[in-house]
Length: 184
Image (cartoon, rainbow, N blue to C red):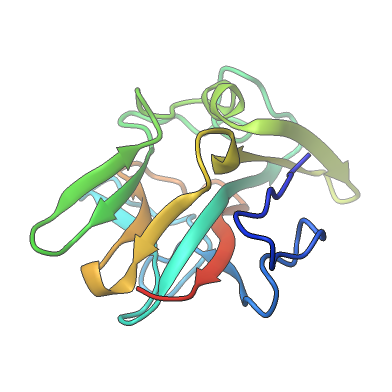
């Protein structure tokens, strides 16, 4: 379960509210304005990104991944049966003064449901009528530190690097969750 340990005494005890009067951040990583990462990205590497605007900083405390497909998920496949050649990478990037990887969450590319499950906490599969299944899990950055600081002034963002055909998935999203910090 997600546990928020306040860094100061002015923080709320509610794990989902953050420090007092601090806006909550929940942003899907986007490709061309779309949050559903279900396109054909096999012809060129594409990045799905989310980061704070200039003048704002975020403290990202977790990254949530959701994969939706037809019923029949297997650990050695992606979704139900999407073959990945290159895999997905999850990275934190700084654009200013030059493009730099701040943190690579994935030591090796994600090629299967099991790869996400090994990296993320509380992975689970849910089924519902219509023959759909959903796998979801999250990376709790609180386990490593007080979250990941992203500065909009530096062009910082979280990015999923895509380079495979994901059109057979019925849904696929990656969301960053955390809080707006006082200053960039």
